[in-house]
Length: 302
Image (cartoon, rainbow, N blue to C red):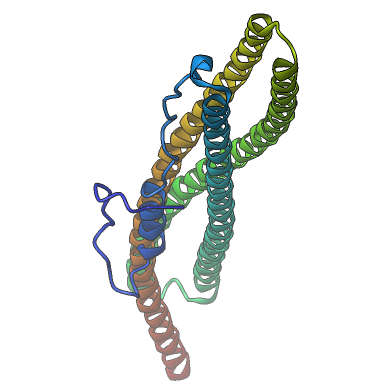
């Protein structure tokens, strides 16, 4: 499909290791979609100029209608394929994020277990001051964990919204495929009608060459031409409707790409926060080991 429109420019190219590059590339490809040339104006055949001129102009109109139909079908197929790829990518990202949330919850449970075991093993009388300080640290850590849980909950809500959006896009893609199938049926019916009209025109031309009632036959041929024009008008209306649906779907897809980029930024921020929490956990573990070593030394002395 042609994408040579100079008014549509690609976004600035980023480095190959940029994680946003696939989304920006997809957005650029969507912006370059072309929905075919507009319906050309038709010039009605003038029977007074001869049957050859009428047949030639009618053939040009029929060929133009068929060409626009083929272009619309090709563009619809490309849009459906892009939607399928977007749905698959969203499912993979959702699965990876759910695994990350589960790992975070497991780490929180592990930290709580360490805290409970430490309170059971240490001598409260000998290590009261250090345990008090450690409890303060654990309280702070619990507050941080609570904040992390809230962030995880918010992330899960975002994932649910993403799933709902993906489901809606899949449904729209199926609807678009159904409409395309209906258009294909209508197009086949239109081709049959055109074929019948062509045969009727040939029959009428033969009769006109053999009959003296040319005026009556010309009127009948004009009626057939008007029927053909009505069929072509209906085909143009359906084609215009398909183009509008494609444009609406394009805007929705651009919105989904933008939302995916925002979610990825939030994911980076959450990962950075998790790294800080892991460093704090390492510091807490070192403190616990130091307290245990101190407890063992006190027991040996006593």
